[in-house]
Structures are given as C-alpha cells and as structure tokens.
Length: 218
Image: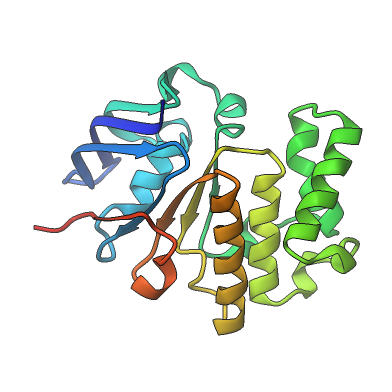
C-alpha cells in the first residue's frame, strides 16, 4: 500500500488571487525517501501542510482533490488519527518547543493521545539514545544549540511513532555539524523503514532521497 497518494490536489489561500497548488498528483511508496525541491513560493510547504492535514484543518482556503495516507482519505480522519500516521518538523525548531524540559517536551504528545506511561518512558529512552541526547533529558530546550533543538523537535514527533516523517527545510537554522547529525539520524530512520519526505533547496541536504521531485517548475 502507498504511504501517500495525492489525487488532483489544488489549493488557494484565502485572500489570494491564484492557486498555490494546481492539480497535483503524487504517490510516495511505503518506506521511500523523497525530496521536494523548488523555488521559494512554489508551494513546497503548502504541499507538506496538505499531506499532514494542517490544510484544510488549520489553514483555510479553497481545497479540492484528495490526500490518502495508507489508503485512508484525510478528509475522514481527525488530527489525533493523522498525527500517528504522519509527523512534520518545521524550519525553526523553537516554534515546536515550549516545555521547560526535554523530558516534558517529549512526553507531551503521547500523553495527550493517552499513551500508557510505561510506553512513553520506553519510547523516550530509545529516542534519546538514538539522537545521543540522554544527558540533556532534564535540560531546558532553550539552552540547546540550534542543531540540538532540531533534534529534539524531530524526537518530539517520533514520540508519536508516525510511519511518515515530513522535514520542511529543517537544516536551514543549523550549522554544518548540526546538519551532519540530522542527516545521520534521517539515514537511521530510513534504515528502520520510515517514509521520509524532505523539502529543501540544497541538493547536499537531500542525498538520502530515492527520488527528487521539482515543484513549480515550468
């Protein structure tokens, strides 16, 4: 079964005169890694927001077409169902981090989905080990470097155990060392079968991709 299937997707933001997406069709296979490239304003982030349900559930506008996650139309799923299938990480990690400690940050999502406390602890131990951040467990995320903050933002999404991970220009706020850490983590996630969608403008940041898709090109 396809991880993502998009059929005839179009979207126009409220108060905009033109569609940002027009009749988009796309299939992403389960376990595949793809990169979406394009110029600023071409609709890359908008497409990501459609895949993860932020459009039309949070951002309104004229939406037509269909987005399927593992065969289920997102129109028939609520956000609590969507976040366990697909997780999104944004450019600026500080927009996703708001708890006083990393432990609180990582526990927040699964607690709201009523995941059992023991399972939350197991997930947290495993994810902190994968990103090599165990010693920062009780630190305030605001005291971390940009690269470390991005790792915690990724970890907070992984705590919900989504099969699909969307990375929307997540390396634009980190230095070269941070980029290498994130790239290594993405390769690990690919090895365990996660479906990964990377939005970027730099080919050096998308070497993990099995396919590259250009959006907004003529």
